[in-house]
Image (cartoon, rainbow, N blue to C red; front, side, top):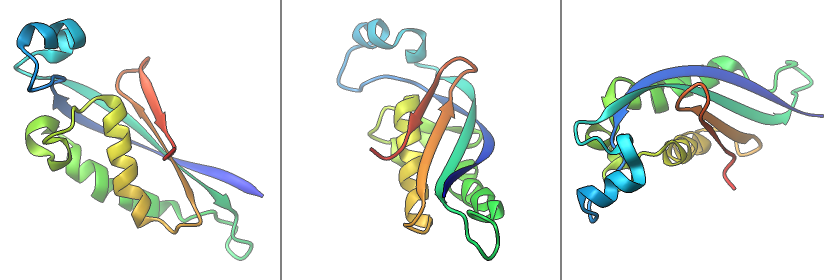
Length: 136
């Protein structure tokens, strides 16, 4: 029987959406106010989903403390209260859109998990805008 457990987390970060090779007018026309040269911030909500088989001995899929600790080390410590463009190496040459942030989080966490588990990253940039990435 496959089941998914989820752990919710939160972090605050600033970013600017833009492409260095585009002029300001093009960036503004594509990214709008998200291309503010002085950056802007979001209160991100993150849901990390782990899917797999329940261990018949423990009754757990995975100890959620493991997931909590991974989120802390790989996401919160790395992103919380940071300027993603300036302070997070993964975004030095990658536009920090919600889509790209979700993929980066997935790529940081997946190698830390037992390969028997599937991972789903759900990232809310606002209460109404969110992305889901499953490594596909």
